[in-house]
Image 1 (cartoon, one colour):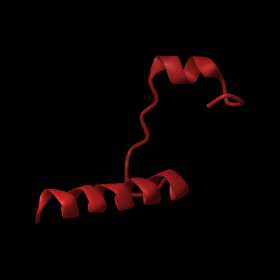
Image 2: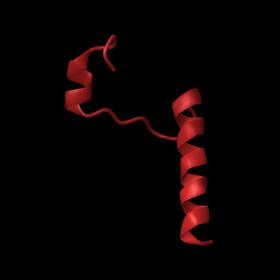
Image 3: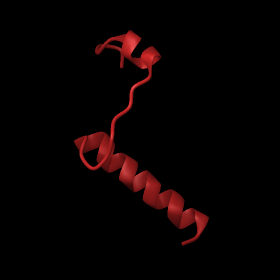
Length: 40
């Protein structure tokens, strides 16, 4: 694969994870957690 195809694949996988929260591991930094649910 080329770098462009790799980037497209990563982008697609990130979108799937962000929308469904399945197929990966969600990691939140302490700073994001400190924002609270309303501001995340």
